[in-house]
Length: 64
Image 1 (tube, helix red, strand yellow):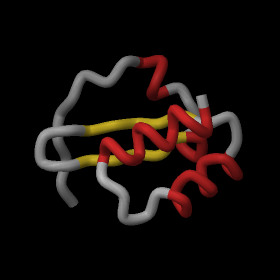
Image 2: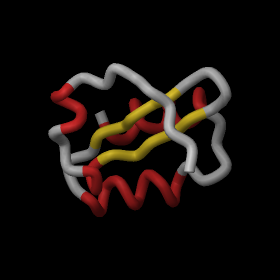
Image 3: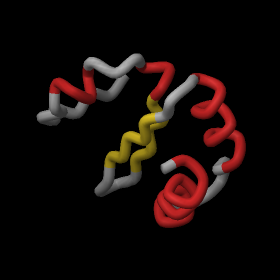
Image 4: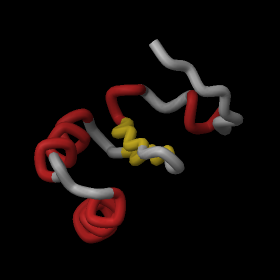
């Protein structure tokens, strides 16, 4: 297990984990929040293998 200390806002921590999708790279940590677990799972399936920018664009186009 690897843990990295971060100051994550309490508002994000209070959101049900099943509504969050998390992406990380060597210098970025992203959390996308969805209205339902179904939406989150659909996003995960649709964005498999995508890079951060592609995932961001997909989220903005389809889930915002």
